Structures are given as C-alpha cells and as structure tokens.
Length: 414
Length: 157
Image (cartoon, rainbow over all chains, first blue to last red; front, side, top):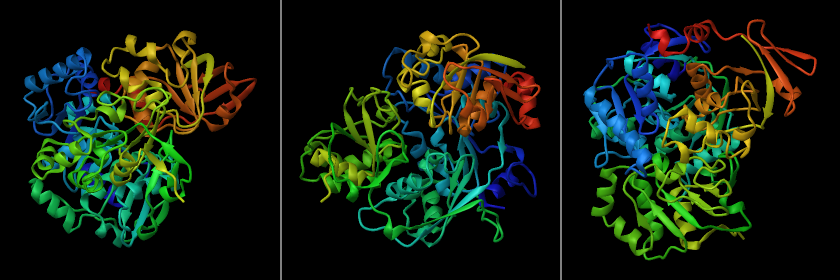
C-alpha cells in the first residue's frame, strides 16, 4: 500500500485497502471557515442533528471575509460564532486569534502525522506536509463529519514524485510546485495522491513542504503527502502536537505514475493567467509585463519564512506598485513586528494587513479593477479570482513577487 | 430518472470561481446565488437558463475551491444535470451530496453542441443527442445509496 492507503486502512479499521475501494474513515479533525461553515451549520440543523461528535476535533476559523468585510459577512460569522458557543467547540478562532486556517492549524499543533483530516476548504491538503492524510470536502460532508466523525472516501491510487538534490538560491517550494503543475497539468493528478519521496525532501524546509502540499489540489490531487522526518518531528514538537503515528509506504507499493524532479534544475517559475498550469520560468519571460499590484501572503505563502524572503528583497527599496503583505497568523504577525520586518515593509511603501484570506479569492483587502495585473504568492489565477473578470493574476514565489513589487513589472529577461 | 433539456456547453477546467465568484460568497442563499451563476464565464446565463436545462463541460469541471455554493447555484438555476468529460473531485462529492445529478461521458460531450437537446436516462444508463446514444456507467453502490436516501445527511438516519 502507498503511504496514503496505509493511513486510510488504519482509519477505517481495515488491514488492507485497494485503489478504487469505497471506505468510511474515522476523522481526527474537521475544519470549516466563515464561508463554508454557515452552509454546513444550516445542513446540520435542517437535518435535525443536535450533537457534534467531538468538541475538540472540530476547528472553525473565521478567516475568509474577516475582519467582516460587510454586513452579510458579519452575519455569516455570527452564525458560526453562535454554533461554536452552543456546541462548546474548543477550536473556534475569531478575529484576534484567527489566522489563515492552513497555517494556523499546524502552528497550534491541531494536525499531525498519521491524522485523517477533512476540511471544507480545498487547500486542506496542506497538512500532508506533516505526513497526514488531509483533503478538501464540501459543506455537506463537513456537516456529516461534525455529526459522525466520519467521511467516505474512494481510496486513491498514487503518483510518486521523486525529488532529487537541493534547490538553487532564491528558488523555493512554490517554484517546485508550480513547475510540477506545469508539468502534469491542472487535472494531472485528478482523484489521485501525490506522494513526495527522495533525498530532495530532506533538503526542503517544512514551510516549503507546506507550500507544495497546499497546491497539489491545483493539479486535481486528492492529497499530497510527505514522509515524516526529523524536520517534521521538530515542527510538531514545537507546535505541541502531541503523540502521532508515522506511516510509510510499503516497499512494494504500486504507483500509477512517477514524476522525477531534479531540484537543482528547477528555476524561478510564474504561472500566467488563467490557470496554474500555464507556467514559465522567469528567465524565459522576454516581454516586460507591467503590473499594478503585488500580494504576498495566503495559506500558500504567508509563513514567517516567506515574509523574511520578501523583507530581504524589500529592505532599503521602494515599491513601484501597490504591495500588500499578509502574515498568515497572529504569531507570525507579532514576530514580523518584533524582528523589524514590518518596519522594512512600511518603509518600502508596502502595507501590512491583519491575517485574512481576503485578496486571494477576491473577497476584500486588495480587489483588482478591470485590466489590472497582479503578481501574487497565492494559489489560483482563474478568471476573476482576485477581482474583475478582466483582471489578471500571475502566481509566483515570495522572492519573485517582492522583486516584481520593486520593479513594477515581471519578465524583461535578456 | 430521465432528464431532457437544452445544453449550455463550455470548455475544459470550468472552475468554481467562474461558476460562482467569491465576491458573492457572503451569502449561502440559493435564490441569491443563482442570480450570479456562471457569471464570469457566461454573463447572460442567469437570464437565458430554463428549468431542466443541462450544463455540459469538458475535462475537470468544477475545479478549484470546495465551495458547495457552486453546485447549489447550478441546482437553484433549474439546471437538471451536468454532463462533463471529467469532474474535479470535490465538486463531484458536493454535487452528489446535495442531489445535483452529474454524469461523466467524454464521447457524449464531444457530440453535444451548445443549444442541442440532450436526454439523460440514469435508469438505462444512456445519454441521447442528435439521434446518437452513449452508454454511461452506473454510480458505485455506496454512492447510489446516498442518492437514494436523498443526500448524505439523510443517509445518517
């Protein structure tokens, strides 16, 4: 069995599972946001359900349209707040405690290796970086999970992604995952697991792994998963995650495909509008593309290390375009203040926002007008994703985005 | 279940952001969502869709966000079924969970043109269009049970 299949077998009480088999698995965490939880709560209540399966294993994070962007958003949060109070949900994160959910949950030690996690948010796959099986579902699945602590899954087959060597300077996990999506396409891993293996994994920081696992859904994958090594163990220890189970793929595990990536050969990469698979190495973009805005943040790239990279580029510089920087959690925000990153950003003419998903999904805090172009460290560049349907989003790493903020353009390679 | 409706055809990778843009996700009211259904890919959709119509898509229909608002908006628009070459997995789950019929058939999608009248017969496993007929695979048993129960939550009892 693959690593994913072994977790699913354990969680469904079976000795063995096979690709394609439908199973019902026990869940260790169920997640929802201020956008998806209200629908789940309505479903839960309309079905006449009165009790949640666990007060500790449900996390409700008010991060998408918060601080409330308008009256309707405020009403949605109110509904979730009241539900959390009524059912004594221990992990309810409101403004002041909340952060972008997929950075917040690992930071709080709420997800760990060997867990089976569902979240009503497609980027729930992020926790695969720690060796968990985690995947996005919809609100009805979330309601069912809150009531029963279970979810049904079709056991996925897996593509083995062999990473070799070390990344070059200024290349990051974001460039690796954009490169991968460019290679296999936005449905290249549809319904499948992406299992990352090889010596290259050891050289990746835990943040780089979070970024890579976060975006596997942009290749259609059900989940992405990394082996549990010393770096993952150290991260979970710091986060206070407690005891966890380490699963490893069997030596004879069957894979439906194999992708090899030599990390030293991965170059800085940008995904052009309007699909994450429209990738081009930065040094091949001959034309100079003038931009209007840069966003650095999100569940993909709002980690402290991402802000550090941006600060190194922006120190002593002035941004040529609007630049919005969003630490993903309060902890990261505070560290950025303490260590002088915020001062560097403000002096460079950037703004620093409270944690929110806001601009990534065109919600608030940096919407684009018709004809505007943005370079963003977020995860999707679909039509209208960050604002007007005639605006354009170029996805990149924090390094590439910060450089674009200073230059006012991307491309122009000689 | 037998359905018959006019096709609204789109290409590959129809994502949930174009099905229902996030700027409207500050509500989950189906009647409000349907006004903006398909707005960023087909601005006239809400005005021209009729009860029973069928949405036809290419590969990876419903990719992107997990928002259940997407199949909710489609269902509230009166659309009876979505036929595509393949579906993104979360959209697939969500559609089944809320009772929006969906079916995969690459061959039927290649045949169907925008505006064609399409028949979908789930009982006999057939899609018919322009005097041609295409076989469709039945859902796995566990999924049929969810559908039969009237949705995932009803299957709890």
